[in-house]
Length: 164
Image (cartoon, rainbow, N blue to C red; front, top):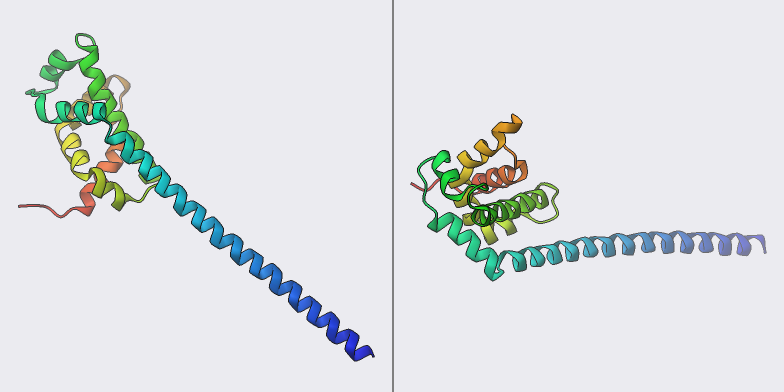
């Protein structure tokens, strides 16, 4: 009689342990799926924002149309004091890159996804406007007022081989 009770008790403990283990495994799987789903949602939201008509128009204008010789010429033509609407286009484009850089640094979105989505935009923008960004930081003794945009540029640049 004692052997049957011990066996039943042992089986009960084993079943309980297996149930708890199974529950933990299911919880981990669900959490991983939740994180993956959230990353996809964030990427989709990012894609939708970047493909809005106004965002694309501003970015295209700032990168492809605007011409300037040096930072002083840039501020004369597009600076915030004389041309606040124009400068707003530049600021908006830079802010988008700063936010994307933060998402990549915090691993909220995959850097390869971002490189595929906007890699060319990041490279073109940063390589054209780095002197302007440096000039904007001078009053604050800061060579880079947008560290996440710079981080994003460096990440994208490191993923793409040099083209000769």
